[in-house]
Image (tube, rainbow, N blue to C red; front, side, top):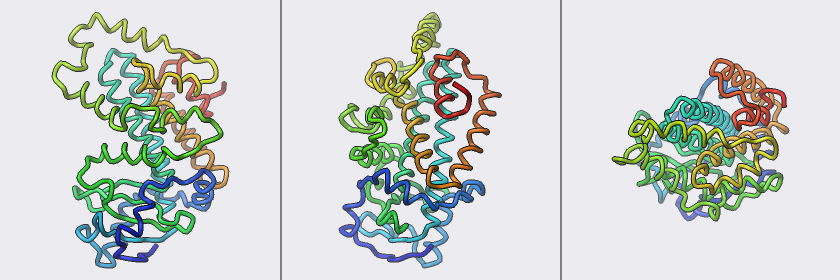
Length: 325
């Protein structure tokens, strides 16, 4: 891993800020990635900070007008490891929100559902070779890391697209800008969760989370009127799936009562799909995903999610090969 340029003017990289990688490029770029960073729990920011500091480069010199160009297959490996990490976090939150609504915590279930989507988006951005992170911790400003030449493992570090924004705003806006041009021809139903034309605004899910959790008299209907709880749970339980789950979920991404739930589970599945696409060319990732499946299956054995065969939580387990069909 090395620094190619400590001063890279923004006109040199502006064209790459929102450029998406095609599926073939993703698979080839990650094909030789080393997953030991995941096993050792080493984060991208740790390695990049050490690299930058060793050259005398610090936060104040990296701006929206001036980036740093770095190179190294370790960077690609670190990014892929974090894609797996955030996929697992999304999985955890998806089943947590199911458990919450089963036990009457409807509002907190919706907030947790937001985080299932949020972590999937972090995973999906990394599967585009991108990362939004703080390099100097604790605190410090956010940086945007993205491919300059993905197949050569060259990346830009700058503050474009993240400066002056919250971490959540930056993640959602970059996700939609990057994936809006992405094509996953294997199943076009996934476009409902990443094409801009299929959502009101990129910020709508942040706004919904903020409204129900922070605004006075919004959300928390279950404690204001406990008699509504059976109706809430019944509405949740009425959504059943027996086949063509992805197509069925894609139709629900605009349903007023179900759209954010449908989007979160589709993003989780989509992240898994892309990881398995890469694993077809990367034996280390294939081995790691097998290990993660075992761990996630064992986790669910302790968490005891709903076991009705046609509930989406059970169908996700089948899709991810955590259990038989």
